[in-house]
Amino acid sequence: MSTARMFPLLDAGTPTSVETARPSKRKSPAGISTNVLVLSAYQATNDVVFPLVLSLYVTPGSTVADITYGKGVFWSRVPKDAYRLLSTDLEQGVDCRKLPYADGSIDCVVFDPPYMHTPGGSAHVEHQNYEDYYKNNEAPDGLTEKYHEAVLQLYIQTRAEAHRVLGKDGIYIVKCADEVCANQQRLTHVEIINDHTANGFVVEDLFIVVRVNKPGVSRMLRQVHARKNHSYLLVFRKGTTPARWKGPRPRSQAQQPVFLQEEVPKLP
Ligand SMILES: C[S@@+](CC[C@H](N)C(=O)[O-])C[C@H]1O[C@@H](n2cnc3c(N)ncnc32)[C@H](O)[C@@H]1O
Image 1 (cartoon, rainbow, N blue to C red):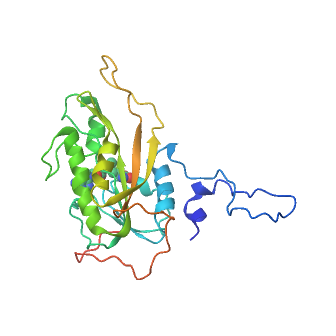
Image 2: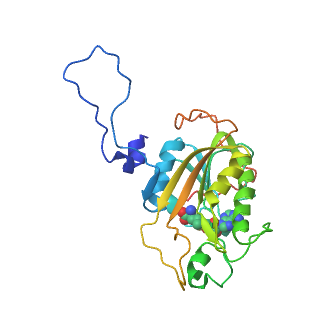
Image 3: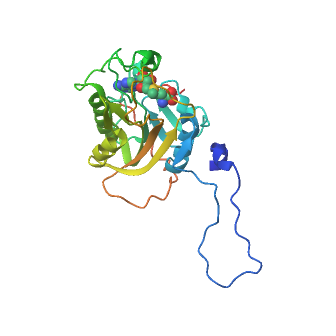
């Protein structure tokens, strides 16, 4: 399947070559002039940006494990036959830190966990719906930390599991957002990058997703930090040495996922 058909957003216009009146004998570098590009920042929703990230980093036909599938919003604009999608979530009883896949059997892991801490019904009381959606009112099993440190702990524990199930050069797409916690600036994306690059991943890309609507705050007294209205999609590659990334490669037919359990997670 062509990238244009898979990702119509990328097909907004066909790149045009710069025309010359007469063929020149001068050797010119290959390539075309275009502004039809995937950009690093969009004011858009996740369902718009996510397919663009896939288009740069994940070979069509690859096996992709979305380990916090939720309502599947990320996938709403991705053609159903583009990837072999394995979707799991805590809601279905699959913890992202204990995945039912064999070592090295997955091409890409997608992780979009609850990424804001909750003080448990005090300062965030007006955000209960939000908190409920993100299943963030209780520390999941296995987390010993609280608040922002608990958010980070989930990323760190999941990084180890993603590393286990990914094959060589496997891609790990991580959604996160920075936060101010107890009036202290916590640049979560920096903390995650520092942890992951020290533990078997190379950072390949960083996408910024800017909210389309205007955020507010409840019970404002005095603003002391910028109100955040952006989040990130980080792209890591399994490996320890930076290498020249040449884009998604044709996938080997022989590379099929192996399941640890008899029951294969349901395709959506
Ligand atoms: C932000 S939502 C994911 C939204 C999803 N990307 C979508 O497109 O709809 C976070 C999800 O993480 C799940 N979750 C929270 N803790 C988890 C865990 N330990 N293991 C697996 N899933 C978890 C929640 O059930 C929730 O569905």
